[in-house]
Length: 226
Image (cartoon, rainbow, N blue to C red; front, side, top):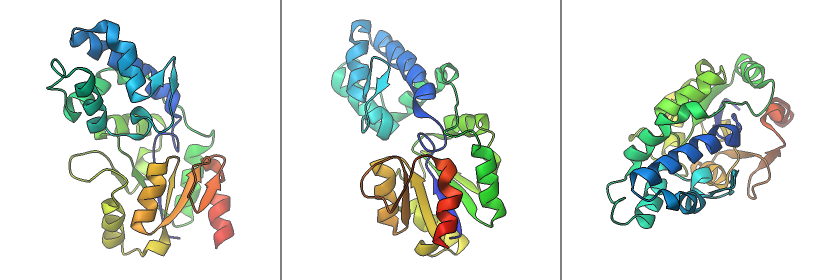
């Protein structure tokens, strides 16, 4: 193994402490701006947020900003017609300060440093956009540990399109058997499968090659495979 690709939310950073308060404020504000504050609850539920809980597989958890914008346009066909991915990004960035950046394990930074010291190159691959991605990874004190961070930047297609896997393999001279993807959603598993690399799931999503209770166990899993 020469390279490890990491998802961000749910893998390196706990999802709910950051995204629930950010999304609560963002969608309440958006409903008010669209002239229908009474429909905020319906909007939140449509993206997978209800009573402070996030639905697995919902758009907020596993989708993109473009998909969230599509939900808005469907619920607000007249007033929301202008809402697109860029407007959703700006809205979430506006309320990013509401969220708390919490690592998924106490020794996250030390674990990543140990992987780098063993000779592995680390990459982050997320459907989030650059500004919030940098904010979160910097908040975790791990941004500088990645060779490259791939985001929803308008250049690289979102997971599960395997274009990023091919780009990394070509740029760094890796074969698929020398790479693995660590994530927590079906999208991450599909991304790894489409790129022909090993998939490691943090959690219990079906279809992965290997499973971890949390990401701190990754070094032991990789060492056992050597």
